[in-house]
Amino acid sequence: MSSLKSYLGNLLYPLLTVLAFVMPLSDVRAESRYNDWELWSSPANAVLPAKRGPAGPLSVNVAAGAVAAPEFLGSDTIAMKPLPLLDVNYAGKLFLSTQQGIGWNAWHKRTLRAGPRITFDFGRTASDSPSLAGLPDIEVGTELGLFIESFVASWRFKGDIRKEVGGGHGGVLLNGEAAWGSRWSKKASFILGARVTYMDDTYAESYFSVAGANATAARPAHAAAAGFRDINAYAQIVYDFTQSFYVATELRGTNLFEQAADSPIAESDVFFTGSLMVGYRF
Image (tube, one colour):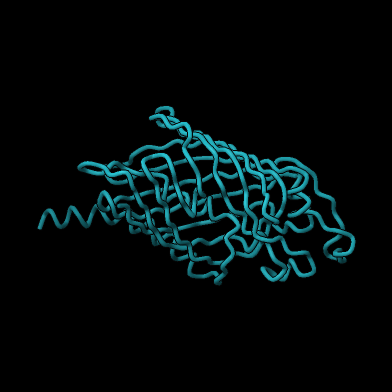
């Protein structure tokens, strides 16, 4: 009986945390576009504890959940989006992931990895929101890039550059990120981090410019230029029920910089997202 009480006590805090995210998520409507899938599903890959016994060359992480996020970058309307994850890693070298993309750890040390990868931008269509009516669609695009990730004590540093080459926005993005993590208990981990994104002229024009032909009284013509797009900060909690079964939650706040915020397309300069995922590693 005492062991059962102890087990239920250990579950109470993470379950309350989950409920804190689920309650507000239930109040927003469904939407399916994944313009920031990489960020929203990142808590599911934030902690990957070692397994017992001999490790094979293949590791798989599958998860499902939901995120409450703006309809599009800069929207003031929150939408509910289902959030699946499939992450496959082979021998610490090759990875195929809905969160990380498709890549090769060309340089792989104990505390550092770097290499090329392919990621995807899910674009934007005028039908995503009434606020986008009359604007040209941005097609789903393929991005080629390079990434680096380094660990120093409790800190993690990440950076990447990506160029869209598949008929989407056509621009370049640079991302930099720093995070600090700690274990609250044997099963619970807590991560705090921040990320900044820089966009080139082509990306800015695709997502934040308004051509004269598409201008309206409420949405005047606007020429967006290169600059920092946004900065965001996040808090993540990952609770391992077992070495394989886990739940991950995140709260993220984003602030658009002037180059994006000045666009009439941006309805809100500051917004928050919340996600919840349940997963299994094998």
